[in-house]
Image (cartoon, rainbow over all chains, first blue to last red; front, side, top):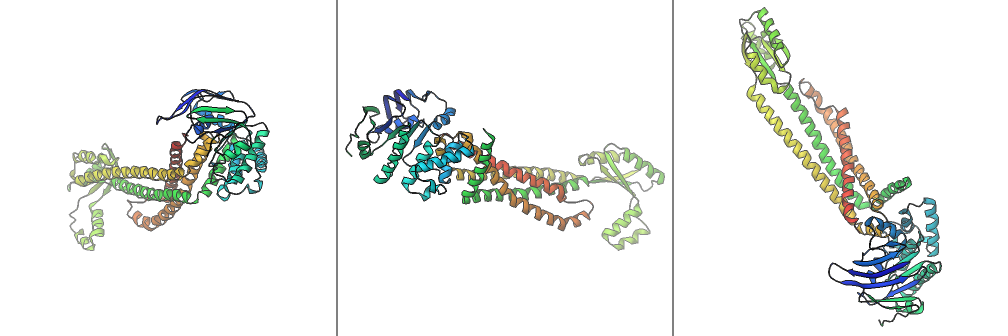
Length: 228
Length: 295
């Protein structure tokens, strides 16, 4: 599913955020990416949906080499990956329904299919009844659920989440985790960067720890491993 | 791109106009103010131009026949003048007719001269093109039985140079106004789009192509341009129609001057304003989105 080989990333300001990362993630896996702030976690995640381009090395997702694809092909890549952000990144001038539908409009789905699929995923995240509300009228947890709904509405094989619970309280965080768990159980690969020790230690999955731009640890059923 | 996606873009552009209330208002106002200025200015310029043309076309050469010339010689002279190169029209006015005219403008006391008319038999000659007037006057002066030719030389030349200069100034002003309009409006639209910079970033992260993002903005710019043109078109039309009715009768009574008639003129100027609104709106959106599409 995802193969990174000797990935190296140096920012224009001289910071090396990835210093030879090689990793292999298989279809259907649930992976936590942990590590201290500034260790290269975010860069690691961002390179997977091509918000950042590696300086050298290969990143292959679904047969596409992200280090080599042209800017024009980037939208095509992003349509195959669902991305969930810490700050939700919902469109403030669109209501819940339109926000989710947008991911299907860009692939030019028919209005009939759009309606059906959007209502399905809103049902899955438990917010069908708030379809006509605007993001600002919702709580953080609800907004994140909408963001998740948008990321999975076009049925990607891979969902990438960058600290999805970073802005949420513990109870809400667990609700969000249950949704991810549900999505993963349907065969979708999930890669999640997180600082949430409790979640990582309780809901056991593969843990990749990034430190100094390198993979310090890669365990099948790992612990968070850092004291906060 | 599928056809129904186009429909989606149109719908999206309308929705965006509705939800961006104040931004829409700001952009439409900018378009309105500028187009109103352009409309008024163009209307004034075009009519001044028309008046100048009227004036220019009315420049005449006055040919005084020799007092001793008899009927036959006058007829020959008229024949010769009308066949002179560059002459478009010759109108004969006998000294009796001249006196009547003079009396009309100067007062009835001049009727007294009827006994001993000091005026000349006169030919009014119009050149085919105003610029030829001087040359025509020179040619006619060489003919037999001509006492004197008045070509209003100084007057005519001064008039032409004033007209040329004022036309050029007008053109420069209109061009300047157009540029200002474009700048003002693209700036306003840019501000509205800067406010949506985040939206554009998010759309790209969700997998939208550049055109998918751009097209609704372009439609929106077009609607803004059209909405901004409505008020200027209405105001300019009403104002021009009324001013025309107010002044044209009096102007037309001179037999020389007239304003541009509202019917073709208002259509032209309104089409111009509408087209400018659309071009400015679309262009403004296009340029402004371009900056933010490189995410």
